[in-house]
Amino acid sequence: MSTTQIESEITITDKASNEITKIKSENKIPSDYGLRVGVKGGGCSGLSYTLGFDAAPKEGDTVIEHNNVKLFIDGKSLFYLSGTELDFSDGLNGRGFIFNNPNAAKTCGCGSSFGV
Image (cartoon, rainbow, N blue to C red):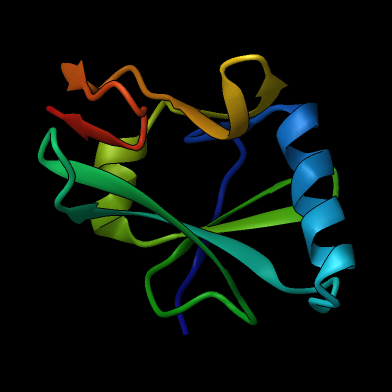
């Protein structure tokens, strides 16, 4: 299996990596699982972000590690996510992961979809 391990394509804030670790612990997800980050067609702006836990990277995935958290990103999604910062907010505007994506030309009000 061919995977690429890099540090700089997508960055993860400490707050996001702490929340991922917390979610894994609360849901009894094995500590060696990674978070699969992706993009799929749909949403009000054309593309949507996807998140889910996976046991191992798939063929062609890029693996990014920060604070003992692994992200798995497929090549197609990486094209849209390159340069993105994954953050977490628990403020007044809601609780959840935030994608600060420099490639997004437009976003929807909910922040879960974007267009390029």
